[in-house]
Image (cartoon, rainbow, N blue to C red; front, side):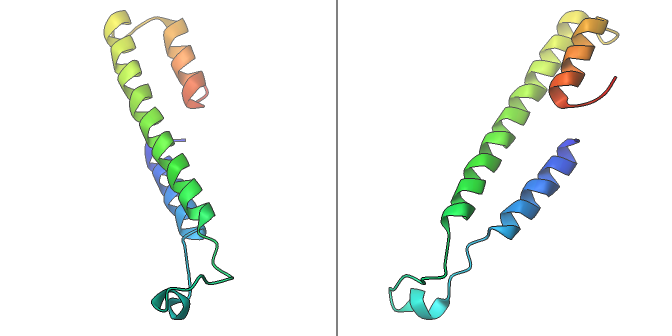
Amino acid sequence: MTDEELTQAMAELQEVVRCRCDEAYRDRGLKDPHCECDSAEAVKVVADRIKDLTAKLAKAEAGLREIVGECGCFIACAALAEIKGESQ
């Protein structure tokens, strides 16, 4: 899965669980009994964590490529592909 595909998938998931509470309840300071916002917050936490891990993976990949060179070691490239879910 590419970074763009991951970003798109997370955006779609966030839209599915977006908090949709009835304004009539909210405006009166009441809780909408049909409103479930916990899922929206949980997805945001997961999305933020995935974004953080993706950035760390990119940084590690750049460092590894620098160490082994652009042509690099087959084992290092295979390990990166496996971590990223790509086939070699």
